[in-house]
Length: 67
Length: 67
DNA sequence: CTATGTTGTCAAACATGCTTTACAGTAAAG
DNA sequence: CTTTACTGTAAAGCATGTTTGACAACATAG
Image (cartoon, each protein chain N blue to C red):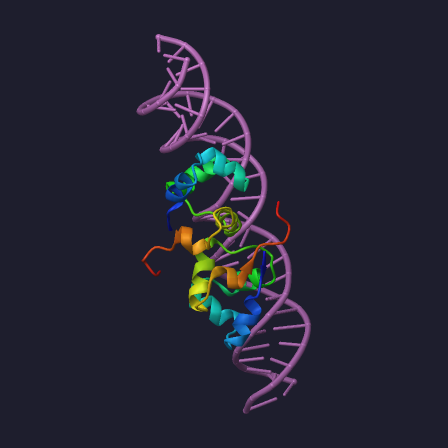
């Protein structure tokens, strides 16, 4: 899963820790998602989209690879 | 997480098993999501949205409860 | 130089998502 | 009544998501 979370977060002037606190997870979780070590849960994806006032699809894009 | 998957699935004339096969999971997984026993992964949510040609938010809505 | 803030990473533990196998209940078709 | 299709559920096990605590590297401010 690709994502442009770093771009959006930096555009909003937030550190990983600040964004983490805003959406109720730890700094490590935001870091892992930004570095694409794993995908967020659907619930966390919704919280991130809500925080940036956009659609989930505006932050996360499934890989080209269609299983 | 609320969802209108049963509505959409039935509107498309699909059984749980058929939808499951279409998005690459088991019948039990679709059943569990429809019955709200757990939320789908973000990846599965994307596949369901793609299958119904809509946004994730058109199928799944986070609970009113804002943690 | 020291302190502070930010990011990257790791291991252990725990929570959630998904599969497999299996069984039960209902409804419709023969 | 028997068969078939569909749905609901359960337990075990594996895979993934998240937390906690910790440590390292870097940049910048004092």
